[in-house]
Amino acid sequence: MYNEKVMEHFENPRNVGEIAEADGVGQVGNPVCGDIMRISIKVKDDRIQDIKFKTFGCGAAIATSSMVTELVKGKTLDEALAISNRTVADALGGLPPVKMHCSNLAADALHLAIDDYRRRHGQGDGTDASVKDKVAAGSDEDKCPGCCGKIGRAVAEGPRPAE
Image 1 (cartoon, rainbow, N blue to C red):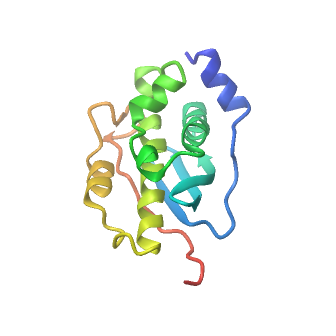
Image 2: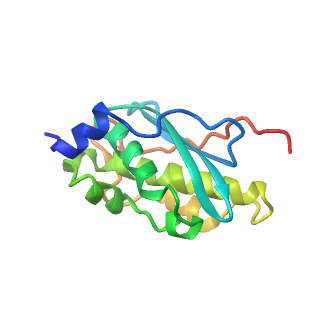
């Protein structure tokens, strides 16, 4: 079902954990489906200096979380925002169609972490319509066969450091 690259990222995930005093945090998921992802970022000079993830979910959810962290470390925020679900799946050498929703979650958590960073640093109010609309709307590939169709993304705000 999964190719070798997906299995490698599942069995040996990169950048697992949480960044203390993160500059931005994004969390997405669906408890009904069972996949919940939280990504935290540290930003310096408009570049993602560090990124970590915590994921509760299937092998594809863990692999896509790991891959998205590898894809964006060192990139500018705008470059990271260009990462899509397709980018993540392609970087892993593909995912089974029934698991494509996992790559959507990973990219969405990243985009929400960037939106959170920008809000915290006065570069927006945390309501970036393009990010929030994309996350809420999903895509045609954004269906979880294990639950009731489109994933109902729950966006949870994590603890905020003193500002």
